[in-house]
Length: 262
Image (tube, rainbow, N blue to C red):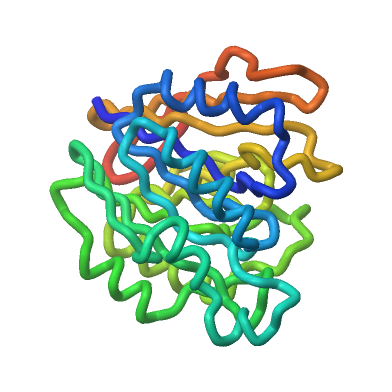
């Protein structure tokens, strides 16, 4: 049994301050084997915000894997965004923008999906897809973690990441089993499986800490893998309540190469 904790979109600089301590307590209480953070650690990519994010991450007791989000590069300083978009991330968080985590029988490959040329949309390139495929381990559950979703529901009004469709097709053909993303501040799991299941289960995280008007809740999820079965614990803190509710549980199973709700 192996546990991954997935959180995204912390947005330090616009964080829900009273929830910071309850969140770190919940994260450490989960005793995950790996914590995966899929971007937007900061709200505007400023040095002070990166310092806040780094201080928060240092308090996490489990091993950590983090990839950037579009809010983690400069928005208004165009020269910085074009010429040195990752300078503050590398100073505060990690030098490697596409880290790999390996715990138990799980292998997690990070992808940097941020496109400085198109600040919000994001991109995944054929070269990134090829690197992921080259590193797949047939003895593991292979997981990809990136900020931008690879599919979106019809009601989402943001442009889908450039290169998402061919990347998803390549991952599906070559043995990626799970994709972890964020960006939309909308929780979703299993939305793209269809009645007969699919080889890839996509987990789209809500926002863990952002206090932006319009965000109705903060949340994160714990994924517990046991053989072909997956237990997902969703921890939700509505904006109208002081902290996290007891976790909701969802179950999935993987049989004959396809994921289905259990």
